[in-house]
Image: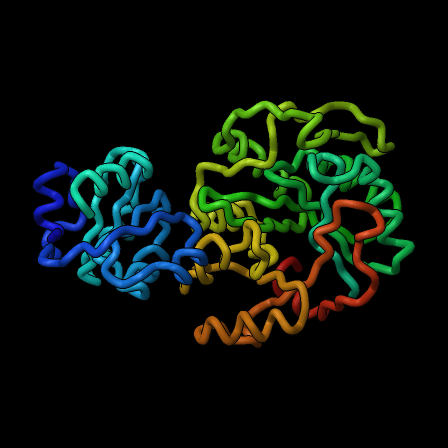
Amino acid sequence: MKLDELLEKTGWKLLTGGVDLDRELEGAYCGDLLSWVMGKGEPGQAWITVQVHMNIVAVAQLREFSCVLIADGANPPQDVIARAVDEGLPMIATGIPEFGTARKLIELGI
Amino acid sequence: MFYDLHIHSCLSPCAENEMTPNNICNMALIKGLDLIAVTDHNSVRQIPAFAEAAYNVGIRALYGCELQTAEEVHVLGLFARPEQALSMQSWIDEKMPDVPNRKDFFGDQLICDSMDRVTDEEERLLLVSLSASLEETVDRIHEAGGRAVLAHVLDRENSVTNQLGFIPPGLPYDGLEIRSPEEKQRVLAAHPWIREGDTLWLTDSDAHRLIEISEPENDMEPGDFGRLWG
């Protein structure tokens, strides 16, 4: 599934307006400990996290994630969002906990 | 100048109740240390008694705390004067979630007077994350006149590298705490932008028991001390 289709089907909120959404989602990865995510994530995955520190942008780029799904109302600071926009990294607020976010992806066949 | 700038008192739930202000100062003196700091988790409420005990025992002291940020990163705030450290408490109170301590599980959180008599207890659990980012926490320490040291930077628990993958470039910390010289090489290898000579590298005990307080093996140049706390 492409990212723009995901947004359309879930109503989740794109935080990084203007970034390219023509990206294929290939599974997902859940994790908030960045050292762990750096070692385990796979390219193309949607990364589900509540971590909103600036380092998430670098980790997402390093692992070549398709996007970052910010769960559970976590609130990335403006400078983090601006950096993600600069890097062309889609960042999406799901507004529901990590488990619910993952379940929604599974329901959509991801 | 032999130092140990990361020591927990009996206010930290995970520390032994024997870690009273006078016991800490006297043990440090017996061990031949020149400079020590008490750094309890998310609190400076032991600092008045510690400051008085250090003065009475005759050992040089810094006054600190070990703050746990929203990212669950541990940061030491180290202050030259007790009142600077004490000025952190109202900010901590504002940022700390109100979770009651379960003494049977986490341990006692005892506050002493300068004679080591227990005069109070912290009722809120101190092993929690403040609702402040790492950057905000470092800024607050600086505003209070202190120095920010990223604690045990390569540990598998509550270190900046474990929680955030790597030390954020541009973070204005004052020092990095490592367990060994070998860890310094690993930090430098993983962070090409960190210059060895520009960084204060500290090796502390993180003592939770008296016996764990450092031996006189970690030496600080008076120039480094003067630059940061003089």
